[in-house]
Length: 212
Image (tube, rainbow, N blue to C red):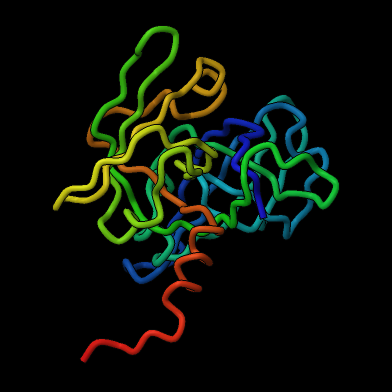
C-alpha cells in the first residue's frame, strides 16, 4: 500500500528488452536521489508514476543510486510514462507506523487519463484531465484521485460523451517536488481511483440481477 505522497523524483535512465517480440516486457533502470535507497532491499515495492513495481536489482552507492525492475508487456500497455526515458514519481511502500498524509493507494492503475489543460492560475497551477467513461462514476467533488502516483483532491467534475473531465489545483510545492511539472496537453497519465469508492460501488451493486 501507498499514500500518494511522493518521496522522490527519479529518472528512468535505461530500458532493456526482455525478449525479441512485443510479447516480452522490459527491464528498467531508475536513478534516484542521494540516499533514497538506504532503507530499501531487493524485493521491496516502489510505486513508479503510481504503478507498484518490485525491486529486482539495486546499486546504493554514490550520489545517484539506482534500482532495476522488470515490467511485463501487459503493464507497459496499461500504464503511461514507463516505456520511455525521463522523470518519474517515486514512493516507497507504506509502513504500518507511517503517517497517512494522502489517501490509501494500492499502486494498481485503473485507467489512463489525458491532460486537457495545464497552466498557472494565480500562485498555483490548474490541471484538467479527461478520464475514461468507466471511471467517471468514481470521481466526486472534493474526492481523492491519484495522478501519476500523486494523491490529489478533485475540485470540479464535468461529464460528457467523451469521458469525465476533472479539475485539480496544484500548489507550487507539488509542482516543484514531483514530476507533474512535465505534464502538458494531450499527455497521458496513470489514474487510480479511491479504493473506498470502489467498495461503495460494489456494495451498491451487489445482488443486482445482470441485464439480459
